[in-house]
Image (cartoon, rainbow, N blue to C red):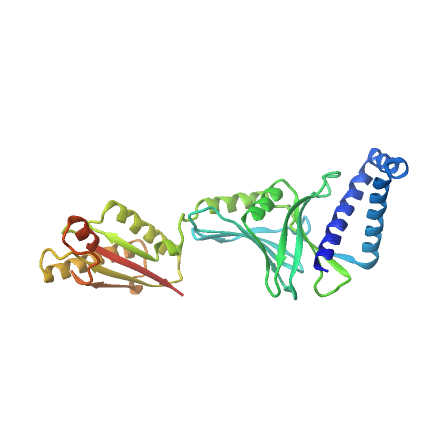
Length: 330
């Protein structure tokens, strides 16, 4: 039954745009008329079937349309930080359409259809790129199928989301079609109006290009390594500490930063304990200097205890000279 509904929906949309295109030029109408009265029997049968399906659909279903007008079409960048960028478009009487990209090693994008009335069953919606009225004769293009889960917003993954943004940039209206969940006689179309899109989209792209190239999970547990008998970090660890500092400046949800300092077994137990405290303190000083939360950074110096390597070679001792940084958030 679900597959039949999807097929009828696709036929209805396709047939509608076929007739729009046919009505725009006399030449196309003449071609259709000749195909109907003079063409191959299979072609005549296809055209008649299309008319019957369209007539049946029109008789039993109405299309409820949701979209902003040209005058009220509003696009805005709601969330703008180095952790997340969100482009929002209000759909009057329906909800919001949102494009979101987050800090990550890989460029990413997601589309979410935030609905006032959530689906009451599993369904699939068809997503098309529909030309505006000032592009007569241009056919719509299929973008993707959107899975609608019961009591959840609709969403689309990266490829479909980027395609929608690209079509909007060209002036097309990404439009979502589905059978109404609460009225079996109605179909629903939800269109994203491309008016007033271009300028805000440039702001959104700039925000996306400035996202941090790593996530919270990439730095939540970090081991910083040190030069022998000093508080100087290795070059790699300096880069890691910079990454942690940049993240702390952006994320206000961090609850706690734990710093645990360690040394190798050379230098005496008391000296090593003091050295481990100094190392952890220097990390804390750096983080607070760039805006880190002083009251949420806790440090402990363990000295030469809890070693992770035997201390019998230069390489193993280097592993023990460390400060472990652990981040936690709500």
